[in-house]
Image (cartoon, rainbow, N blue to C red; front, side):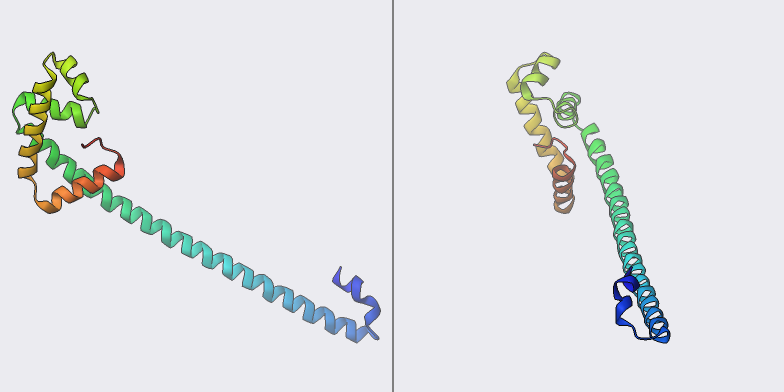
Length: 144
């Protein structure tokens, strides 16, 4: 198509041949540059994807360790307190729902929940509490 549009601009057959060589060479170079750019973008995407998987694995590992520590610490609480903490944070039940389910007063639920949280805070270092808070905020646990 390019040649057809320029056919009147050539004065000899060698000029057409020269123009075709240069045009094909330039088209090949443009194509190679385009492929290189696409390959570069693919490599960058692959790098970012690999980084995301590494971060996901690292985060999952930390979450699993913290979750294990949290559940172990809850298991060490008094039975009713531990049950209230589990219902509140792992099942997302409100104080009213817990009181109704366990057939106890709202005030007992509130008191046991507060007592349980105070005991749990003592069992974790400041760094662990920060990680728990960050992970709870990031993954949607219902920590209050």
